[in-house]
Length: 530
Image 1: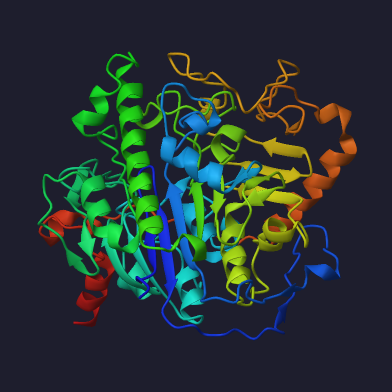
Image 2: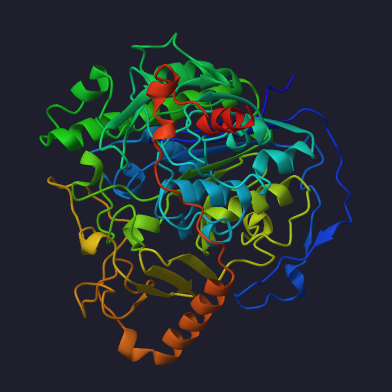
């Protein structure tokens, strides 16, 4: 008997687990033409035959999303400080995506993952959802579990949501997930499971419980480490989770901290390493459950982070993206170059995939793998045929983002990336090696210093094949490429949806609801009716 489908989220890990509950057979002759929008038109082969790729029962789908995991925070990329043997093993047995990208921050990445669309087409292109802000991924958009439901899948989420919680229609159980055990805000304390948000209205700190089983707040787990309770809950559905916290983000069990006492002197980095190790241990438990229960030969697992690590003191974190430039929140490679793996030992040969991939490509890839149509409005491009047979279309360009509030944008065309604007005065736009040496086998080789550019006065252009660390601006050398990319950015800017972001409101204060983060707009609407 197949277990329920499942999706999980963590400080360092998010996971989606979807399992077919009835073997619905898709139409084998159904075709969908993807909309090229502002990128170069694709050939007729772009029309994808949505034929299921196996003759056995529909594959289980697992998606692990690691939150705020830096490029240099896993041993897969050469870190000798933080060893992640379980993540490394997934890469060894699966397909490592060597040219994989996410968004620069959490909410936009999750929105792109869930919808197959760029954040600019969702209204999510500017900043994350704060606890007291009345907005989220608009309910009009269909998301992953709703697409999979029609193919006979049942989906669950364990852990972080962070796509809206101010009213019930934005919650995961109202959008296709059968159950949710976890938290709704962007962060939660590891032990008391309270979320804290600074109020821009009153200057006070909003605090309240943010741990849920579906619509019911959970008081039973006070004092129990979040990773442990999520792993225990998720192991039967083959998932595990972790959480982030704004006040004291570096929380980990002492056993994991002690492991690094003699190895890492810097306290922040040591605690961060312990959290990564705890997460990696949970990944190992998950993979053991997948294999022990006989699902390995009919499971497709995607592993990704949601953005680069917060560095240079951001969020009191000890993360590192070295040697990549920039941090979380920035459009430099350190903010958007992702860690991506596809694991499907019964369906794919192991190896490396070097073509361009974006987090929005995961949903269309899943849909093609299970034989479902890919909607015209998707920005994402399926790379399933590329993984299986090295045929079919593949991505050659990518809109990283256009944010008219912060005045930032970035676009990838072939090997070239054009980036414009600075965030937070450029405080996080540099290269930030950790306080102690971290790597012994670099998987990224920097080209060396060249013409410096920060994007403040004019855009910067980089050839990422030759200069992955963005050290040598070639703007003046390639005016034709600058013109071509600028035209594409302007084209996409015309298709943008207005941002959904809304300011904080005191109506959200958990103190109004017995110190629980409730969907306060539901109560506001009831009061107006009365």
